[in-house]
Picture (spheres, rainbow, N blue to C red):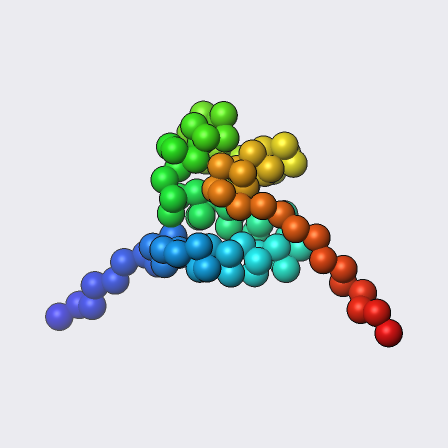
Length: 98
């Protein structure tokens, strides 16, 4: 008997604000724009891509394209999506005081 498997979808595990924050923080620590865009896309899917697109003032198709692995969203788009997700960016120094 063959083993049946299904594709892993991390969006299924983003079921709390804490999980979403941890997921996005990890993506931001990569400093890789493609990983960050992909993470925002996964979070948007977890919360409902159509609603996030509407809240961000974008079409669903353009949001999918911008947040795909091949997308390169403008900062304005990223900020709109973050706001639509109910999140905010914060800044912390990477240099520690002596």
